[in-house]
Length: 62
Image (tube, rainbow, N blue to C red):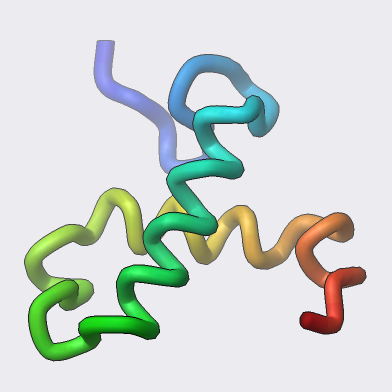
């Protein structure tokens, strides 16, 4: 069974693993953008973008 575009890692809603991956991707991308590229890792990039659109992520002003 192939995952749907809007699926998270394990369920139809984000769990701790999804949040952790999204934050790790964002941090790593910001730290070494020349190594961690969208082309090299499209799945974590897509998951991070989905997470960034969630109200809890939008509410964080950093």
